[in-house]
Length: 187
Image (cartoon, rainbow, N blue to C red; front, side):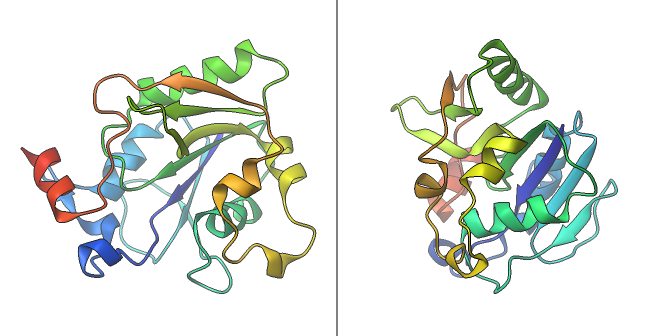
């Protein structure tokens, strides 16, 4: 399994703050994500380079600011080798753990026809950026032209895929979009 970590976004609701560098419990959000993906053979981080506790491959979508789907596809392009499964994780989900990703992997493997498995929050919303996808499914859903990737919504990219749902346990699906979210998670 490989993993693509998305650190990006403009952090607009956080006043432009770099989400990857925000700390919870003395550890950056990026390091929380790296710990969650410890079972991955290869990790590609889509975002600006910063020091990390483990080796990663760095990349950016082109042009920068293309959104999560463009970032995910840039991450796929940066993989050193094709992996059967690709974990996709947004850096702003610090409660995702190795056990979370293991449940997602198990869900994909349990359904041979599934193209992936996504975490579902308590309100029933699919968290497309806390998921495990089959590499072939992602590449088959890719737009034929590179310029069509910029601004492509994740939902539209993943529309043709068959995705299993995995219910979040506890706060796994919590993310940091606002300063209030951060205060809640720190508290």
